[in-house]
Length: 250
Image (tube, rainbow, N blue to C red; front, side):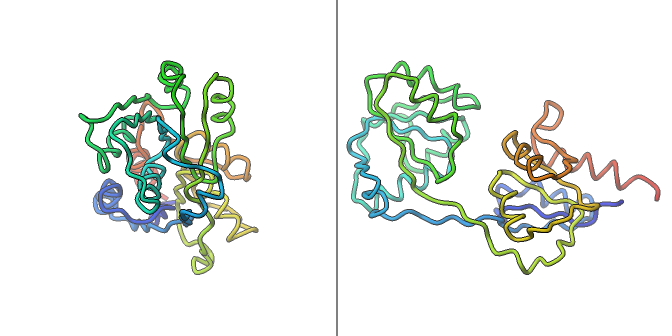
């Protein structure tokens, strides 16, 4: 089966999706972008209902770029001027760089993890006398609260946005050779929209362990698993896979 059509389950972003655009051009295939999930922003009143006052906290734990956006969005709408003394702990270097949209590094104290949440625990332990705020969506890995609760610290979680499944009814029979997923919510959206989804010959690509686990749990056969030492990015893995299948003589 040759690969002609791929669906990326996220919206088109000219910067982020550049590798896929190049892949489409180089391999002469069609790649569509469609967000499988929608973000519902929390309001100032939603934050107050959670009994959260941003000024009560001295350290913010960022585990995603979206949490950065929504923290500063709510801070502005609630007229909370984030103090220069605020400390930040970012789960990854990517998140830390993204934080520069809102703050100047030289004026702030930022601690950066490597990959997983457990990587930032040493920084949390070092700052154990501080008060920690964890901005997140309504979906949070259960191990994160478990790890924080085991530390002798003051911390609270605030839900700043929620995810819901997009309406994909117009896709009908899903005319794609490969479906690409980046998080478990996208897998959920697939089956919310198509409860009787039959994979048949459709190839499935997943990014990250949680997405892979969700896909397996949903009964899907996974053909492309990313990241790996050989293929740290989805675009690289897709290129290799397409080259392999599209050079086979049928």
